[in-house]
Image (cartoon, rainbow, N blue to C red; front, side, top):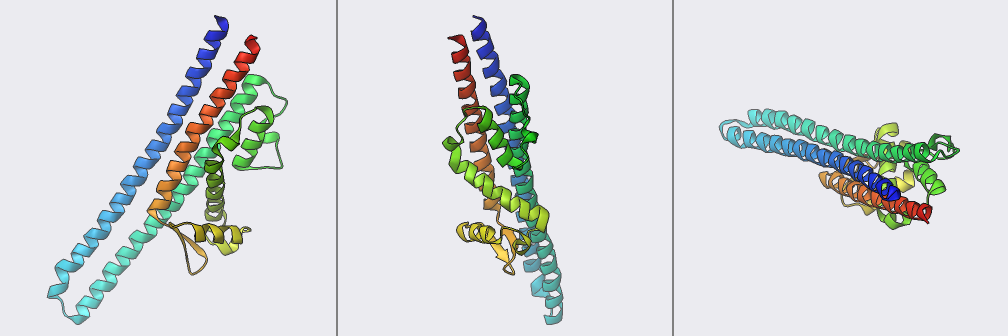
Length: 232
């Protein structure tokens, strides 16, 4: 009976943690949708201004209007790109935070000889995975597809943060070039500056959501197996 209560407590705690993580991603999705919708409305509104005013203007005035509205459209597109880059940075930080939280939980509950921060050879989500797989039997190969995509997202995140999105300043130029070539939603401006479409962020959010579900399920199954062993 005592073992059953312990198992129930673990299950409830994990369920709450997963629910909170998925809720956070849902809020990121909603925020992303609202911002993108606003940008789209703003561009449509600018186009409407052009259609309304262009008929009454002479050639010189038309050029001035086109230049002015073109500048407004460019500003909006610049804000759109900034938003998408910020979303990738925030999403990667979110995943890293959740993995580090799992590492801290494992250390606290099991009194392992090392913390994840003691793993100096690795950083970020790679260090978290190394710690988790060192001290547990959790199998990251079960969600290897999502993990590989998250690794690539982190490479893009690093380029955005450390190189301002300029892949030529990155230590992983060839890797980033390959990512651009294989993604429908990534491109390069001037052959060096990352450009992200809305769909790229949409896809990243779905990858993160699927990863969280599979990660917590694997964690639950590992705890379940350990509790079963201890009850024998």
